[in-house]
Length: 88
Image (cartoon, rainbow, N blue to C red; front, side, top):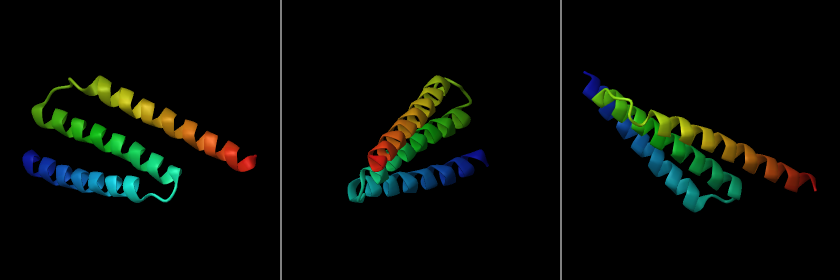
């Protein structure tokens, strides 16, 4: 049963990854591209979590936590930079 759930979640993550790549290519602004890359990082982290759940190990847990932290810090940094640019 868990294999079916993993396949469904993996398919949805793959569709989300394709949509993120489209947004990176077609994004009209730098904010759209940065947000799409941040979502792509989270999709990769979610895929690693799915793999850990399927194989019942926690080998990639440190990478998942580090990737989420780096994505959050990067998004906050870009948004602060853009907001400073708009106020100037």
